[in-house]
Amino acid sequence: MPTDAELADFYGGMERARLIPLWKVYKDHVPRAPSPRAVPHLWRFKEVLPLVRASGVLAPLTEGERRVLGFANPGLPYDGLAATTDTLWGALQYILPGEKARAHRHAAAAIRFILEGEGASTTVEGERCAVGPGDFVLTPPWAWHDHENTGSAPVIWMDGLDIIMVRELRGSFFEGAGEAPPAEPKPEGGSAARWAEGALRPAWERPRGKYSPLLLYKWEKTGRALRRLAASGQVCPYDDVAMDFTHPGTGGPVYPTMSCRIQLLRAGQRPRAHRHTGSAVYLCFRGRGHSVIEGRRFGWERGDAFCVPSWAWHEHAAGEGEAILFSINDLPVMEALGLYREEGLKEGNQKVK
Image 1 (cartoon, one colour):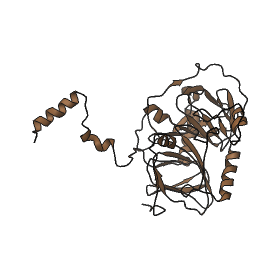
Image 2: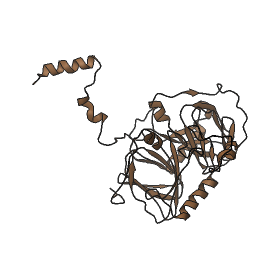
Image 3: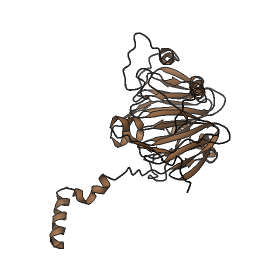
Image 4: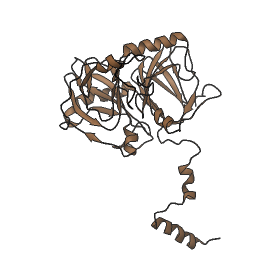
């Protein structure tokens, strides 16, 4: 048996040589199951909204690129690198009437889902996208974009970005106002004219590109698709009437790093619990209901946001009426890397702790 002095000399030598004894850290590198640092959490709109409104007075756009209040997960450090899950950033953005957030671009992919307010628009690479409640708009990586509110009331939308994983991969780039070249004029709604029908595409276009060429997904079509699927009786045992927004040229997710989903939870239904690798951030768009995440019940209503960490048991149900949830997730990364795994709960539903 080696003596304490021999072991101390051995491990000291490895440290000086910048070597790591795997047998000492094996369980940390290869856990038996995913061990996210993020925890399930709910951000209540009625508690957040006063701070959102206060930001309109206390945080003018001249002091920053955007007026955004991010969802900081209690399981992750609360600092300048705060995040909503281990890989995703979720937030609420607030734009007052007459304001314009200047153009910038970044390597991270972003989405906006409009919660309330009319008259706002996002211009992406020269194409203006006018948005209203329920609309969903993309700002692909490295695309110049700005936001403007020409309406008479404030606009609130959910931001979703893959900025956390981009940062951890050391792939971040950013360019701000003053660095943007003059935008090439494009027809408003041009991408929708080419791609919104889904089953049809212009003859000169080819289904290439990693990011969806359709920038704006209008609520009118989204809501109609949900109703049509619900009426057909074809539903998911775990998520009820759930649909993913897709790249119209490939049928895949809107981004290679991030997928977006809309789901209708019907009254009186109780979908089964399941878990999967990959995390998600949810926003209640309409109605009210609850989710059980790792045995803990979270009641939510319009405007509330919550997160589900990787490999956490979760289930969702509407209240007395139906409810609609919008969500972002990092499942495309898990699937592309061969890391996606899913299982349903044999008992059907969780016991609430």
